[in-house]
Image 1 (cartoon, rainbow, N blue to C red):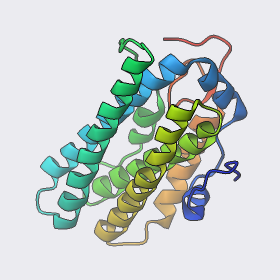
Image 2 (tube, rainbow, N blue to C red; image 1 turned 180 degrees about the vertical axis):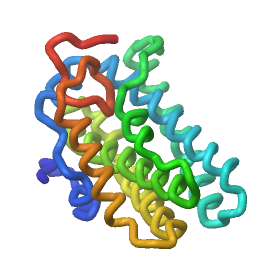
Image 3 (cartoon, rainbow, N blue to C red; image 1 turned 135 degrees about the vertical axis):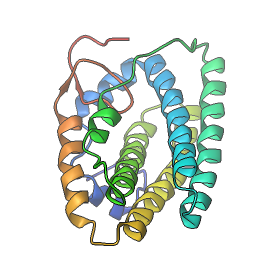
Length: 210
């Protein structure tokens, strides 16, 4: 996969089964306000996911340490996005959630440790796709937003690595089959037509819905 002049770890790009479609990139550039609002929402949700894992799995020391750091970083990113929105005079209005995360999570198994393994794998895909899209967009944004999105690449790549490493640690078995399964589901969500435009949406249809 190519990401212009922006450097993204090869292992992250290989983890994803497809690139973001050009139609999504074009729509994002034409709908910067929606992009920023939903980006802010994604940062809040990422922090909440990390906190929920900390509360649910209190006996996993490595998870507690990684998720605590991740939650702090995601909240900082949220604050940074909101600040950019203020500068650009973008009102933080309500947006409905995209289908992306909920569609992936519906495949999470209900028994442990499979539930934790799948949850962590889904987290890895969310972070990997975020990193890939920051790279796709960065070179085509104004200087301030480009600088910000490039600055996010390293942390998002590290979050991806943390999630997938924790999944392998706690699974008690080889996770390659589950990774391949979720890769198929994720690619379908990214490449298929989507009635909404959101940060993690699929290929947008002609009408952008708020």
